Length: 453
Image (cartoon, rainbow, N blue to C red):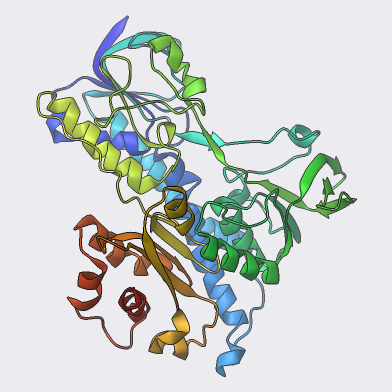
């Protein structure tokens, strides 16, 4: 039985744990899929490359109102797809080749499963390691719908590599993956129908934001809210969903392709982590302490397998913490998950950090909130934007920002200054008045929102 100094399970953010300080270690990496993990291959990077192209299509289709004569004449889907994956696939292949070429790293291109404490079966071998990092990510969650397993559905893992753009697309789900990928295909010309079990898209967002987002998507697409999916089947080239509306009426929805985007679940079960004495919570996430140690001695965990927010920037932060703690067990550092931001690259874009107003009420925190429309700022007025807004929430006593939520163009960029202000413990008054805001740039919307508090 071969023994290593370090075994890393998962080559997404887990791959970045290895640094020059580990040059003298005998290291193993086990990865059953592509190097780079979800983000590089089936998540953040390719989806946002599609989003960027879709935004160009949407702008071309909607410029007449500004007096500019452009038009959208359709998308060359294979060209869009091949441009994206023609850049991404070599990176994944290069990452594997690089690690395989290191003298102190052994790569197992297979699924690893625990068979005992710090003992793993992989690629027909049983190996052990003094230290193990579990970073095996998550996978699409598939709902229990009659006939779904055999109807030929897609997930975010496969939909972006379609051979052709579907004329009609059904999207099951209303979260960020559904919103982003459905919007992309809609911008390129697909007739998109969203099927949601709830009453809004992005149900975890602040009520103001999810209400505005749902209104925007309901104008652009056929959005079936509060709808139950009863069954799925394939009829020749068509996928058919039988659904029930809030009044109890049943109908059939037909399309060329079906995207199932109803969430993601951690991969701990696939690794049989219980066999190693690694505890998981009720949702299957590996439980870690603030140093990212697990319940099993010598085992750390990071990324989507531990954290339901499932964000790449969180996994990267956690990888840095684990990397340090592996080498400095007597001087460990802790994760900082106080102000985790996220963004939804839909059309419109959404970005958020901190508490929602709903959460403030649930926690009985005294607060003040304000919603500032983009149109109040000069650049928003120039854009003739009447739908976008920035919402800020502050503690009424300490004047610290509790949460910020933005919907509209550049939301993911505009929120960064608010994240920084929260991190450095500034009051909303300091954020608003103790720096210059470039006029007439869009950040003035944020300035105005803070001043209103």
